[in-house]
Image (cartoon, rainbow, N blue to C red):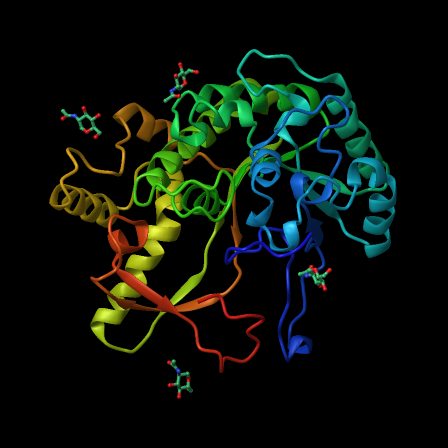
Length: 369
Ligand SMILES: *[C@@H]1O[C@H](CO)[C@@H](O)[C@H](O)[C@H]1NC(C)=O
Ligand SMILES: *[C@@H]1O[C@H](CO)[C@@H](O)[C@H](O)[C@H]1NC(C)=O
Ligand SMILES: *[C@@H]1O[C@H](CO)[C@@H](O)[C@H](O)[C@H]1NC(C)=O
Ligand SMILES: *[C@@H]1O[C@H](CO)[C@@H](O)[C@H](O)[C@H]1NC(C)=O
């Protein structure tokens, strides 16, 4: 698949750029793996009873969203070529394979209570069984960005009712595959789903609700994650004995200069882009600096309440500690300095930090900013 118009490549491709790799070694029990996501590899977008996802819908309605009108209709055709893919994994000698399940292949209409598609169920049963037969552990991402379009039609991640739909979907997966799958990632990369999907029109569903969509989406995604973690703990953990966690994308931010201001800017950036998810999952609520700044700015901008929704006390308790592991997807490092003149409202102006990179940096694969 070709490169997205936006700034992020969302495939879990890991680059090691390191001049002196020989100085390092991995412990004997270190596990190597590779990863993929359903929309980027499966193809067969309308085969085997699959429903339409937001990526199918967006790129069919607006082919120019991606360079060269590329899309995932066929992609790597892994829906048909999965046996060859497993042979390649075996050849690589990996211990695990992380892949995502396509929500619309399992539950074509997406809704809580709607029909489960047996052909889709079989596809992943075959894949999981074949991986295990080769001694490769399946590591499953429940949601890697391909929301059912039916759910987007009622607001997608902006509508709190998605939490129930997501819980139904995850429960279906635990019941179907939990006897063999022991590691589950609820949601992959919240910021990319919410800021790039709902606030800056860069990823599906390509909405541009700057400074508003990102927080509503994040709020519901965090609730959905927490509920699924608790569901597994309460109903599946004792018998299935697996682990449930989540994956957050994080750039690392360095102060642009050694000034106190820039040091604080770097801290702000990490709180608004990483802490927004890690802080609730670990401590139960958003970072205090986020709640303060967004409330004050929302008030100044004439909103009648903070653009950042609030969790109830009960929700805080539910989300707090909702992880057996936390994954970090790290792509690059950036420089931070304060800037009070960014377009408002937006996540970036709420954070108040301007970011940059320097093309002279060694090992920079490409300049993000
Ligand atoms: C886009 O299409 C042109 C013409 O077919 C091709 O030369 C180019 O490599 C394509 N770019 C990408 C990124 O696939
Ligand atoms: C949110 O979802 C509920 C339940 O499916 C639906 O009744 C409602 O209309 C949706 N809200 C919006 C704004 O679409
Ligand atoms: C606050 O603003 C929202 C969105 O603009 C509006 O729907 C709501 O009625 C307002 N509430 C009050 C109490 O003014
Ligand atoms: C990039 O780094 C070089 C070397 O440290 C420095 O001279 C230059 O000013 C930097 N460029 C920017 C745009 O900050």
